[in-house]
Image (cartoon, rainbow, N blue to C red; front, side, top):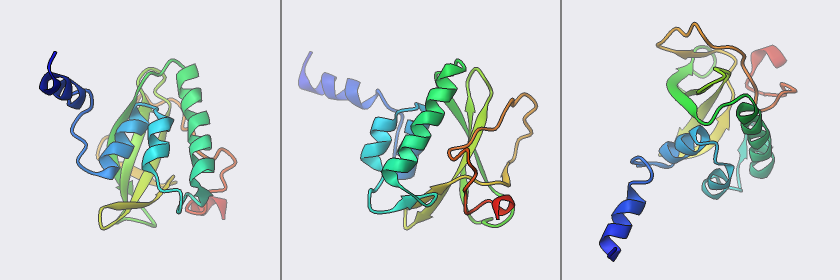
Length: 149
């Protein structure tokens, strides 16, 4: 196998990831915390947690998805339906358990400045078979959740 064939094979192992947000979405879907650790900036907070703490919480959540038989999280684009209507993000749904979580992606000039859960996340689809919402922060200390104030 020559170098060009090897490079093409390596490039096709991931879907086209044109932006940092695309890559973060993809690696959340793949439940790959190691790649998220490399992608997310350690100088900013995510949902008011330092990167490492946020990723630890996300890793625990991903282990929970896996313990319920999920091998992948399907992502459905949506947005906040209340406080942050300009923010978009994804509903992540376990491929087997149908458990779900959502994250808004706060972007500034194409860079991720925050990731956080939304208490009023909306998609253009109605889902009938979702089972249980799960949270990055199960103690619900989410500053962006009106119900926690």
